[in-house]
Image 1 (tube, rainbow, N blue to C red):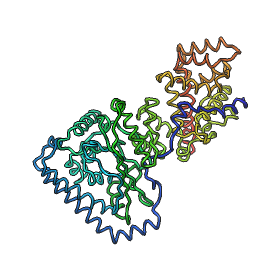
Image 2 (tube, rainbow, N blue to C red; image 1 turned 45 degrees about the vertical axis):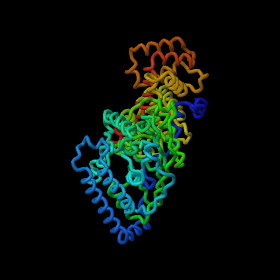
Image 3 (cartoon, rainbow, N blue to C red; image 1 turned 90 degrees about the vertical axis):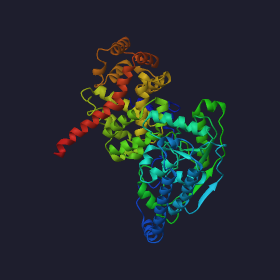
Image 4 (cartoon, rainbow, N blue to C red; image 1 turned 120 degrees about the vertical axis):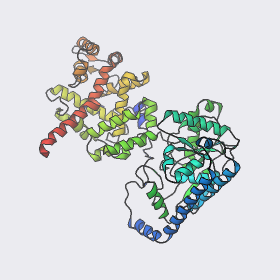
Length: 548
């Protein structure tokens, strides 16, 4: 057994789907670079100094410009019905809105953006009817509207802001309700209509990431900007900073506090690069995701940051993590990658996030991951060498207890793909998703689940497994209720009885679980989920009398 455990510690799934899931730049693009920091005495002193000198002037300038913009928009849109905003405006209305765009520059000046570095130049609407940019903060659309005009695709939430919401509407923005599939489809049609109608519309400006980031990565693009198959001009915006991160993301200031904080900085920096116009190939016209991927790569290279598979779903999971009192940063799991590999949904991941909070109550372990000793303590109830898994409910069967501990040890080393000596949320979740593919996944994913299970049970593919041990592990207490009386149990008993005193090969095991994937599902639930959940419940129950 000792030699088997030593070999298990060296097992890994390099090149497997687990390895693919774990390949990540470990960047969370949804928290500010200053996340968790406290204000330093220097920052406090600086804000006090700016607060009694520049801040009053900036605040007055900002409020006056916003008020003037609002009044001009009232005049420019007088007599318009809702349907009229989707048509080209008359020249006199366009000229008034042009004044509104010019007033955006003194607004940026009031926010501390005294000098803005610009490289490249905006293309004309005939050259690039669509403009795409990365999205960091509310400053992005303000600068782009001032510099190059355009009508923006904006969330319906934006029109709820006092004054600003009406200005957004008056600028003929295309409003999308992100929670409505019908709205998203209608917006894609409207983008194509305006981009191809050059009779009076400016370029359509989109932020294809669909949310704001901290600028340290380019996250997944939505296909709306690329579905029309028209030339686009990519624009990248960078906000170099030391003390105040202007990113409007989770964990940073709210919109009002962020604006005031920008005014309390001596100066803020913004660098903008207009990249050359990109034209799609025939293949990219037929498959917009290819077009989006190429443009995303160009923008990431221009910024010098990675392109990650994070999506808006990651932001929702971070909010769910906060609700569960988990460290929010661990929930940025690159949902785009998980969804493409496993076809899993945000709801499924959120359910497992809740389970993780139940299994791992310690905040430090939640953040850094479980060590092997912690993994065994949580999942098995005791260290492997003691061969007793009290919290898992198998202490009345020493052989089963030993089998469980060895299975847990092997699973730990397999899940620890990055070889840090810890299994964190991402690795644990990847294991659950791999095993979940045993029943409903593609043939390739089912093969991954079978390979993972065999390596947990026996080690290398050429190894052989004692038939009695196979029966004990696959039917650990907690599984029998699910398998009792089923065809899967009869097939398993038939295999074991036919191998009395002998060993099962990988091929025989593979044939069994292909025909009866519920056996593998029950095993994975026992090792990766049911055991830890029972351990957590037992620990909570044992702690209750002490609290009394």
